[in-house]
Image (tube, rainbow, N blue to C red; front, side, top):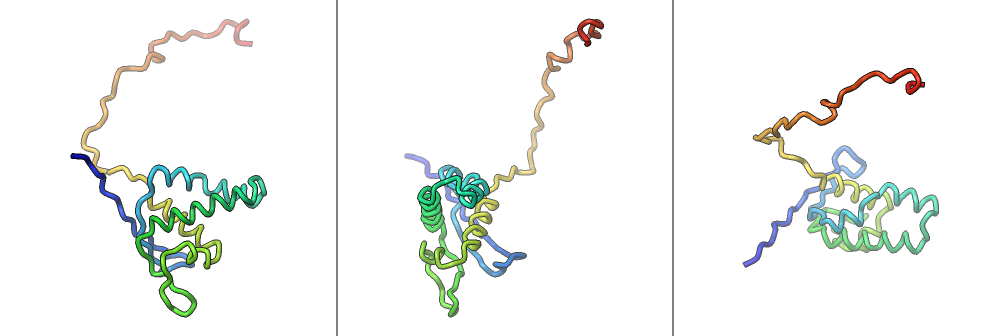
Length: 145
């Protein structure tokens, strides 16, 4: 009999932004997702500065689109006519670029690890460090200069 860990579902909200009212239910990132979406700011800068080829940039962005869609359970995104948009790569690509980056950043923020504040056991103080017991003396004039 094996163990299957429970998958966490996050609810992303975009209140206090230009996307106020947009809501997304999405699975928490896996370790592989964290690698894929790591250093997002650096990638944006590299793309804009031309440090990566157009093909490399497009390949990574395509992988990011596909992976995000695999993780989104549902959203309340609508088209210009007020019709619900399906959770597809095409729906993301139909939006302005900022939409995708705001969505990614919200997902990354929601995945931040929070340590439980109720840590009952404090760590032991431990032994004094070895540096504290090293005798110290002033340098002679010839070594000080």
